[in-house]
Image (cartoon, rainbow, N blue to C red):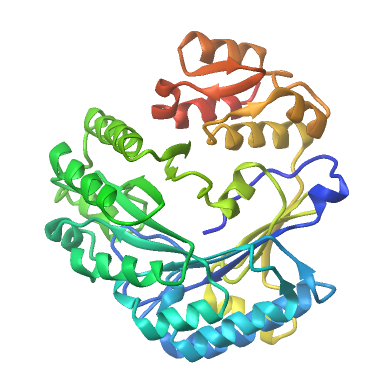
Length: 393
């Protein structure tokens, strides 16, 4: 899913020309109980209508054909829910507007149970060279709780098939499921170390308002894992990734050498990007745009010849700079003072002297080689760090 990033008060030609494209494919077989993404479950009959609307959005929003980009990311939803013919059409639609080289990163999110040899051939022909598999767990009881439709054997088979054509394969894992112990989570991490992947993303289970999981908490059926256990689980992920030799390059992301997700780094670095499809966000020329999340609203607007944008905003410069500092700190390499000052026309701690000093005193931020970065404790308490930076001053 595309992230929201801050707009810059001034942009160089390099910064204002997006080199990244996100395509939101809003279809799933089933909406998992923890999911609040913009998607349609069990409504595959809308796929042709969506594809036609997507083509129209690209025609309306991109002024010139042949725009060259470095990364393309097909997210969702579950892009692998589309069949081979539909995926061929999806890739063709995007290629009508954007071009990229064989060295570019082209990612696609997939459900392990969707992966088979015919689909692999389709993805390879479409130029996909990076696959992100929504594994979430290897444990059958946890997969049942999370309402996933696969098992460990399916994950392993999907990884093997994807390795046959993709240069990078990533797994997503979730921790903090109801009743999950630290030992249970350790077994998931052990299995992840044993499979031939080169990227791992670990996410704490959240109970978003309006989801079925949220309602189960409200009814007292479930209780979220306590804070200490969640922290222990996260630290175990850090240690497990280090054992494998993966670099912890972003709060939730670990990768083998040179296998970071370049598309996501676009967001964290505050670079511009295109976003198309229901609920997708864009950052272009200092403007932040967000599409209508409803698939039907998205389609109806485009069928009427209207752009599907729901919100468009320019941020006040100081707020924009602080948002980018907060987002940039998600990267473990931190934020370079000189680069920040050059881009934003103000020192990194302009108006934030007290906040940064407090965060350093609490062992949440550190400075090495003129880069401001999170400490290990700051990684665990990132939400608090970001809130302090973004708080009115």
